[in-house]
Image 1 (tube, rainbow, N blue to C red):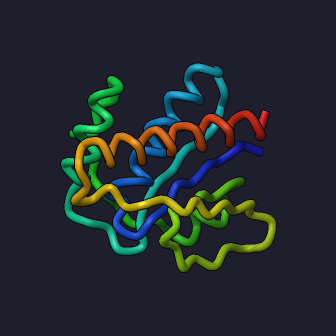
Image 2: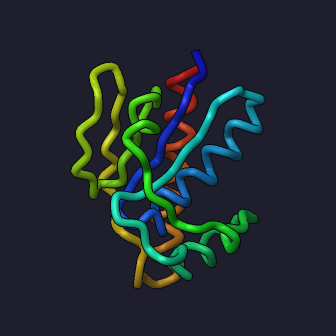
Image 3: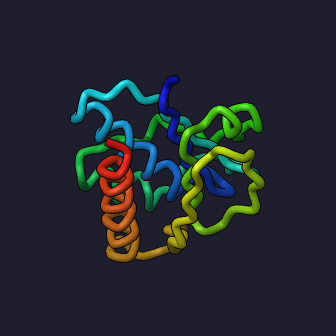
Length: 132
């Protein structure tokens, strides 16, 4: 069975986009065969500028990403779903869930957005450590 990680928030324009990018990087660094999906329950039109800037500072380009809706099917086939402290999702039995109570970087200063980014990176690395 393929391990699938889902990173979900309401707008899919900030925290879940950062978590997804860090998860993709971590998957590639560890040469793992994980599927990674992201989405929101009410997707925004674009990724927040603060998020694009904060991720650019660590060499990750999110300027080509577009928020999208997460589907019930994607959630049901996920091994782990990490929500960003803003979820009202009901997940099927057998899906491991983590609710990461994180501040929304939208409208935050560059320093605040960077601090949120760094916390997300720590949590993603820790999640990968726990799965291996």
